[in-house]
Image 1: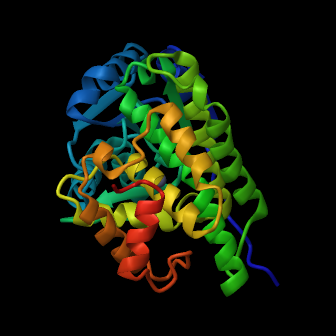
Image 2: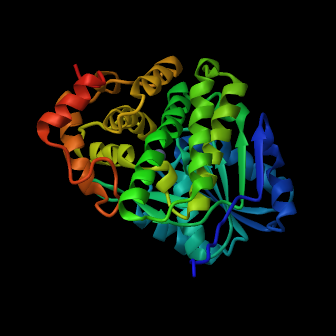
Image 3: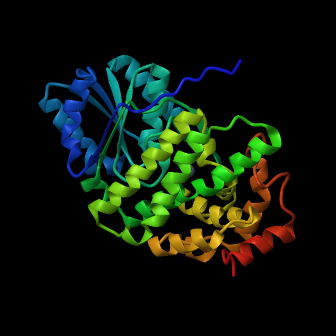
Length: 350
Ligand SMILES: [Zn+2]
């Protein structure tokens, strides 16, 4: 008999200009009014965190604002302890990444719902159930919970630095190689595979690649498109019950770079470069990925990312050890000459 599955999806998803002001109404609809625990960052508090608290307080909600600068387990524990005192009905993660990851994991530990309020669209964690938490030099993905609601104000998101939105596109486009790795694992190792999750993940990548010329700085329509693709990607992960549809060898390469590089670039930028190289290894159309990234304005070379060529090679050689249980095109690892070749042919290094 096949295993039963428990899939968790967001229930109220709001995407559009000025939807932040609907936050009190969303809480009311979900019967979560009363006390709200807001996790935000020092900058994002000024962008949206304080505003959302004011909106809620106007509707007689009591808010606890926790400002955090790093997504570490210690922070999760501090938030959990503060929340246990405050006894909120729900958590709000208001920020670009860290705040959402912290709220996601802390809310899961407190066993109360969480609402994702992204201020930028730089990665697909805004709607997924996974939280990426950092320790000394590595970042680890934890099973948390999917947001009960996503409130994505494209008025705010379109005004965030364009580099963040471009990185979000990179993260979505990298689904192309994640799905190929998953298919490979399903064929070679009989790993459970979900056709619907894979299709949805691929579709979100194709949506962005097909509209690459429409993604421009400062446009509400561009922010809307990227947020939708990121939400779809998050839902694909919820269907799969793992990050498989959106994280393969290209993500392992990015995590390896996080460990190696003196100054790592953005997650989505690193995954995008990883996707170009992994698509080459898969024998697929890596040039299609590269030209879409160029059109959007996502870096496609080490120098554009501010990373040394040697760091790219070292990350390629380390990548297969990052998550050894996750079978990918990297197999048991590349040889140094193969690593150099893939990086050079795809023009990632000079
Ligand atoms: Zn990612």
